[in-house]
Length: 388
Ligand SMILES: *Cc1c(COP(=O)(O)O)cnc(C)c1O
Image (cartoon, helix red, strand yellow):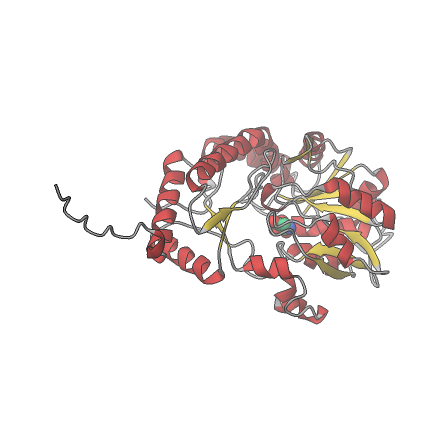
């Protein structure tokens, strides 16, 4: 049995008629930009996150870049981002005209901490972007406290954390200025195309975001600053409103699959499932191998057996050619560099079946054993004949 890394068909098939109704309504009304569909989803997502305001935008990357710009972050300033994240976190800093300053991550959770943040601070630091990776929530309390001490802005990258909780509270309302969301199709809440949002408690930030996403325009024919076309599409907003009521159920299904993985993989020699806290939304199920050669071997063997996997991430961001100009050589962020080649993400999506999870575990254990015959029980020497 082959198992895909992500199968969106399982959750989309039952919603096909509702998606069609969204399309029919948009065509009937010729309402494609803005309007009730966008306002409706923004209100629903703000409510879900416990945020005062939500501004729908074109993608998660644009959400991050616009949030930085709306907060006044720009040239000559540094924004701290973890070295282990999707490239977009650092890219958004550059898009806002500022300079990414990387920080290291915790070797168990793969997340930034207040300690790694502190080590990255300089006199030019203006903001920090904690990333809730794999659906785990960053330990925000100490980070917000440190940021407050130094007068730094905190903007959460919540692109993998729809519905994830920290100390019982939903990510996105954890004391930051704003949280940025991606609705890329494979996220826990995904559109049928690109989409994103910023949630915030600050009405002025929300108002500026609304201007920036639409050519810096507070009113028709008036452009008070340079913005761009970073709007959330009415169709995507409609599709997202169809999917939002299912998010908690889908997250619960992911959590059940994760527990099933945990049970079968706990104690298997050669791998360590990456810790996730109980309240997380299990965006990804990540396991760590002892070295990158073993990780690559297992990845290839699983592929040969029809099992899809992902890498989050194969290279720390400071080693990507696009960020070579920052001059962070080997040894700059040891934990992130050490983790990079050793992580494999196993199939994880709402609707993955028990049989699919069991198949992945069976194949993984078999592949691990094949590569390490010494860990199998050694053949027993023939028992000497018992003498009577
Ligand atoms: C997906 C993702 C983004 C970017 O979202 P897009 O909608 O693809 O632009 C940013 N940060 C993280 C951590 C992500 O996983």
